[in-house]
Amino acid sequence: MYSICTLFIWFILYSIAGWIYETIYCSITKLEWDSRGMLIGPYCPIYGAGAVLDVLICSRLPSAWAVFFACMAGSAVLEYTTSYVTERLFHAIWWDYSSLPLNLHGRICLFCSIGFGFAGLLVLYGLHPYVSRLTAPLPHNAIELASLLLMAVFAADCALTADSLAQINARLEAAVQAIDAQISEKYNAWIENTKQNLSEGIHSLKDRISLEEFREHRITEEVKKTISTMNWAQIRVLRSSVTFPRTAYSELGRRVKHALSFNRNRKKQKGDAHETDTP
Image (cartoon, rainbow, N blue to C red):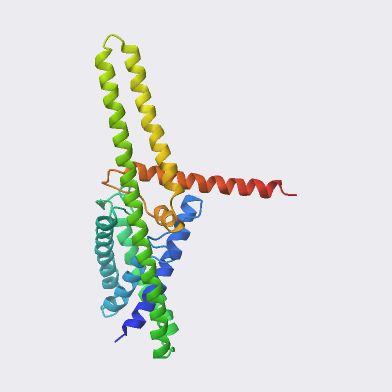
């Protein structure tokens, strides 16, 4: 029987391994650095949870095929539940399989579940024997101390991430409300002007165009304002999330993420140009 402290250390190790895998894979596919995971630190807890459950449950199964199907089904349940809960809590999602075939609400898909089935085999028969040998020689006091330190860091990261997400959601919601209020005020003025100048169709059309321009200008201003007031933790969390579905500020959140990505690429290009110009 494994101790809670040992299981937690395994959880962190596999979470780090999952972060390394996802970061490398996504960075290669996007041709740019893409630090993955919903937390600020270099770990993806869903991988750690899946790997530990794999060790606890599947090690007792009679065959590799049983392990494969158990990991395949278990990963689907874990992914769907995690996606649903985090979206409900934070109004954000960190993965979306909507573009892949045989997906369920974009939260899981058959192709990825099959991949996690093979990953379960890799963990149980390939990685875990070495991981268990890594922690087995350590004295009980060292295991407890290491797990307590890791728990403290992990808990602080969770608290900081949750606070950052709450502030981001509140800020985006307030920005959208401010934009809507100002647009509504200007739109009402446009309606009144149109009623009073029914014969001046050209002028009304110009006012309508200026209303659309005003909306675009206000959104751009709010994007700049939001980015200027964000701290590094909020920027890290926002970059790691995919989108804010089913919220009034989903479009604004998408634009802020796009602006952050654009600013980072521009700084990188400036840095590369400076290195090229330096003799």
